[in-house]
Image (cartoon, rainbow, N blue to C red; front, side, top):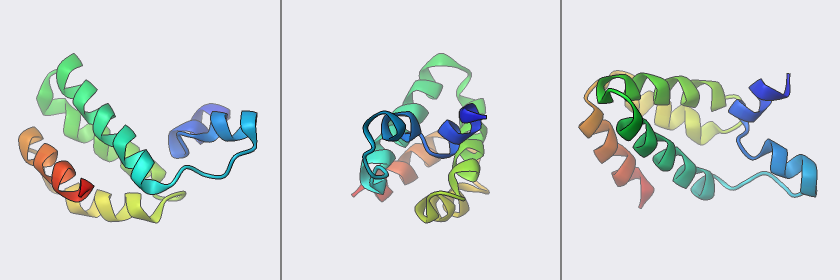
Length: 91
């Protein structure tokens, strides 16, 4: 079941291999933005928000910040608005 663990904690494989501590949220947040950007390029943009919210929903157990971000995005469906929210939260 390591696959689900890596979805919840994207840095899990690195942590197992090196014994390092959990990745801090600001660094992980860059991964979230990168993931969303890749979704927009690789698929129909209208499907990207749902996949991002699904991932954030799974990460809520490990990262309280993911819960906050998930709540902010939960009702939004417009891909460009979600991109703006992600960019605004990055600062």
